[in-house]
Length: 272
View 1 (cartoon, rainbow, N blue to C red):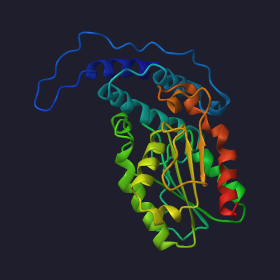
View 2: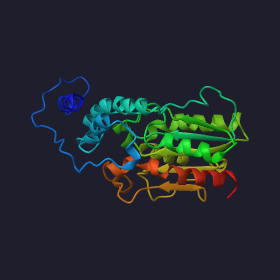
View 3: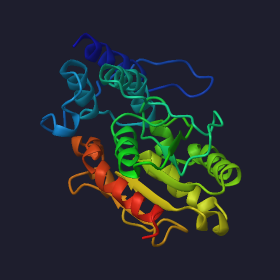
């Protein structure tokens, strides 16, 4: 609980950040960090240790308004999520393309959600990769996370901060490993990164993408440019982010959909 209390104090001190060259001023009104919803731990998150998980859920359910204040909270959320990952042995960073690993049968290029640690995050990417690896059987899998800040401010820019990295990794995969099946995927802000990347890529590049999968997609239900007939958009009914709203606990449970998403990708790899 000490970490949560320090977070509230820290966020309150930076809620009104000064502009460039101006003096820092005190905040006269407190930030409302009252939880917007009752917090119950869903099965998708039950494997994590309860102490840091409860702190994480309390922060998520009581986020302040304003990009500056939100990104201040992000400075706490990211290491807190890494603590959760370390506790259960989840790898939040995947760099197969960056390390020039041998070409694989399938290559996933994944953009994580806002404030998530590493370059593939915690709650959605790793379970998806695990499920996909199992369903591919003897076929090999490479995974590369998109390198971008994943800040709340970047969310307001439609994830364009991640476009250069995702574009470069897509081009690398298609050029260096022409036989690999390239999968574009993203969660939350990462879905916006994917959408912005798809909109900026040449049509012949998008034609070479084997499948596209988004989770908790703020752009739902709009089509993804150049991905007709090979797209799966996974959005939970009560996930407000998929409807233009704020983060709820339902936005954190896409591990429940890992098997179905992996099955979709395997089907596309097999020519379905």
